[in-house]
Amino acid sequence: MKRSEQRILTTHAGSLLRPKALGEMHGRLSRGEPVAAAEMAQATFDATRHAVKMQAECGIDVGNNGEQARESFFTYVKHRMSGFGGQSDRPRFADMWEFPSFLEKITQQFAGRQIDLLHAPKAIGAVSYTDRAPLERECDEFAQVLAELRPAFAETFMTAPSPGIIAAAMLNAHYASLAEYVMALAEALRIEYETIVTHGHILQIDAPDLAMERHVTYAGRPLREFLDFVDLVIGAINHALANVPCDRVRLHVCWGNYEGPHNHDVALEEILTHFYEARVGGLLISMANPRHEHEYQCFARHPLPPHMVLIAGVIDTTTNYVEHPEVVAERIKRVARAVGDPHRVMAGTDCGFETSTGLAPVAEEIVWEKLRALRDGAAFATRQLLS
Image (cartoon, rainbow, N blue to C red; front, side, top):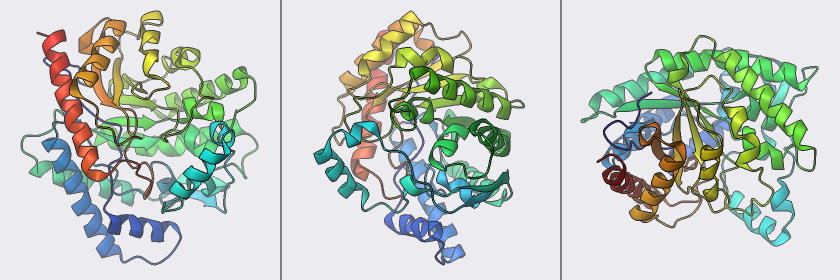
């Protein structure tokens, strides 16, 4: 994994907006409705090419395929793994249910989504990775698009979910315990993790569960129960990464990619050192949103392990405000001061811009403006930190 040796490098958290027609195809496929395979393949390839081109034009150093081949950041696994069916009933988000008028507002916003993340399939049988073809096709298409890119990205990444977010949102109706389910998921995800790295990309593991589940599954329960879940998931991730060099993996943690109260979010102070036990070379942490912007200070109190880099979320992915580059630069600088070494800091986004098909709070043109602001802010910070 590259470090910011010559300049503060820029990246993002993975998902980029999908064209409307492709999103509708993802929705139909997810609901079990017929979709013309050739039409969807072409639409996915064209969308991937566009996503890569726009990242490059916006000055992203470490880019990806925009997750165009996936319906959401985690439910796509039902197309690649066995054992899923029926419907889950996701626990309530504590912050949403506390404010009825907000709940009404966000329910209306969610009405246009193609994928229902709150009622995803559940585990009704043994989970295993049974179809590698979609993953190999996704990697091959990304490689084909990258071959056209001039100049190339400094580095590339691809995402995959943590076993914890699947277990939390695609509920268990088969295994004797949560631990058994999480470990089965880790064993299945091992194939995806290793394949992404074998294809030459940094693996980003998306693990909102390591923060968000405190105010969802573990809302109102003792903090220790949630921390035990965090440790269980990190242990499972380490198991799945047994054959992957840690410097080829980064871990993304957030508190939920939605504009909401977030007043029940767990503090980073409570969970940060648990992340240090993960066999990864980098952490991507949300630090641009109003609830967690102050928590860069945690890295001064709990120093980042020497082998890790920090990808600081300095762009909010839930608002159409375009951050001023000087605001971005200030966020980068204070993180770098807390870490103690600007070479170990990269600039990123808090989360993805369309983590689930049809759920995109930021307009497409503004997404690119935000990434340009990220680029310009990193350039400002570079002149002050590395000159």
